[in-house]
Length: 365
Image 1: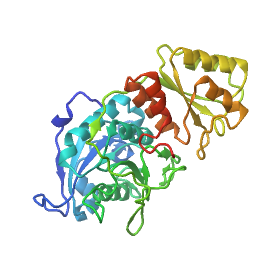
Image 2: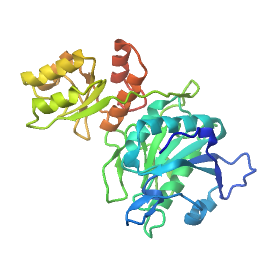
Image 3: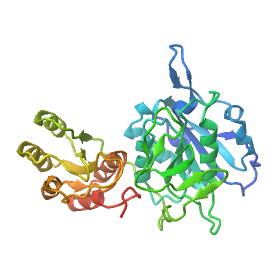
Image 4: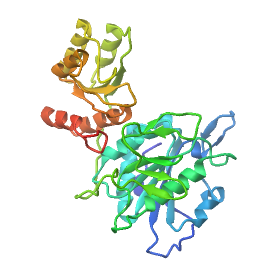
């Protein structure tokens, strides 16, 4: 995903739907195509590679029945999501910011491998978001006979255009991931399946919506509309790392990660409710990293539950050292949160406060 062109320079292509293009009352949705399996085709080497999503209306005739005005925007270079970088997240945030006033909602077609990271990153970068930004994709290309692309995309567009029945506001004013039949908060999504259609789950927070015969929204789980105008952030600190603990991990491994030149932050994937070894060398490694100004964020390896530093002796030492507890945040949301908060360039007290508190629904109070 190359970010050299300005977002405003990328052309918008109208997608034929049931709505009259001149009907100002029909919801407007911007469909942003970044690449991924949904738009892949077999290349000369026999491998699946991103292709241009041409003639979307022919590939998905279901779109013609939608009462929405849909515009398609393809990024200049389409890639597999394994190649997505923080620079691409910043570009997507800018793109949504520049088109924010012209559309009621946004759908991002994205590869599944790093979709949870991208959705979390956009959640932080788009502060005071008041419109839906729905990430979706597919486990099979759109041209495959049993592809899940049609159902995922059509439903994502419907969610992005949905208005609240009792207010003139958008129904889901936050970043989400829609896949198979559930809409998950962007900071709660985790890819859990590579072979089945139910690719994403949210273990510690309920879905924002479910798709069956109709769409059922969980209004009590959806974040409230912001009181301020959208603010698009454009700074991320990329000098971060992830250190996953395991029985038998050595001092050489821990030091190799925490001593990376210029490292600013590290997500510690600990055991259970935030527990870690109490050996002298491990404690000394963490103390040395903290003394060098490296922020440490404690995240559990368990997919359910939360970090409670101090519940056991094996986590009390982390709290006393100054490691920040991540509560029930996912690793994906923790990595992108570190990038976002450290990118703000705040003082230590404010940085610690933001790392430990809920910013975009990533932590259950």
